[in-house]
Amino acid sequence: MSLIRDIPGLLDFTTLLLGIAVFLMTYAYVTRPRNLPPGPWGWPIVGNLPTLILAKGKIHHTFGEWRKKYGAIVFFKIGTLNAVCLNDYDVIREAYVNRSDMFGNRPTNLRVVNELFDQKGILSASLSPHWQERRKFVRGRLGFGNRGIEDKVLEEASNMQKELLKTKSKPFNIRRMLQQAATNVVCSMVFGKRWDYESQTFQDLMTSLDVVFHRSSLFFLPENVFPYVPWFLRRGDEKKARLERILEHVRAEIKEHKETFNRDDIRDFIDAFLVEIQNRPDIDHDNGTFTERQLEITVLDLFLAGTETVSTTLWYRRRLKRS
Image 1 (cartoon, rainbow, N blue to C red):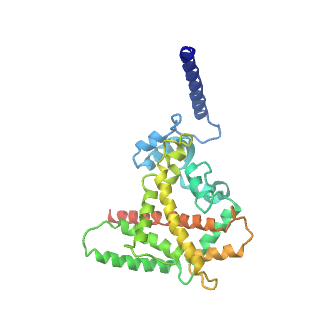
Image 2 (cartoon, rainbow, N blue to C red):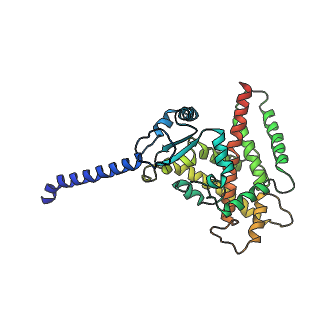
Image 3 (tube, rainbow, N blue to C red):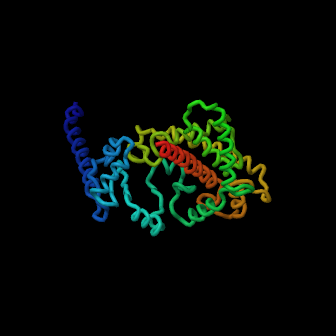
């Protein structure tokens, strides 16, 4: 009975604590440091997400309106994440060319990205001497072997032409074919081979990439935007499963390359990376520049950066020419 009598008091105390917590969170949200750029007012917790969602795929129009009102550098909130939009050629060049050592880093507070990539590879790793060395290596070794990148692109263009002829002049959507061609170019550079478009392995790879790029970016998954309430925000689970599926393909290729490896016959990017691993036997296997784990994530990065972006660019170029 005493417990029942105490319930109103407990509820009042809980309500008080909840009210204090909400007040502190709101206060912390709306009182920002003075040195941040100007920007639109955002709601507590969700920030400027409602405005971005209502833009319905035309976020660039919203950014354009913000530029007119706040200038070329605009601060806004994506949920709990702080964000800055550089909305002018001069400020973009100043940040990423003239001051690349200051602005070339990657965010370290994205929960899903950290779980998947563990600060390894190229795309999500923090700016460091290891990252700079690995990036320089990647830029220098793509197309490594008997044929350069141009030859691989021309080979895939020839194969794509054969696929086009199979349509027998009937109407079809070329976008999927562009995605397949771009992915096969990456496969040629990294694995030293391409797949037929009908191959089950290739189709599984394409399906996994579709899921990863569908709807929202890995960087803006709800689990990253609202990291304090992860138990009901599970949108990233399918993407994580599909990324792991891509990694399974990558590991299988690395295993095959190790079994057939010949230092005197460097066939592709994986072989070139394996040479570096052999040349540095005493490196830090957790955080070193050239480790097998770094190879896995770097190859994954090449697929994420070199497939959808290229095919989408080609797709839009086609649409612009048509219009």
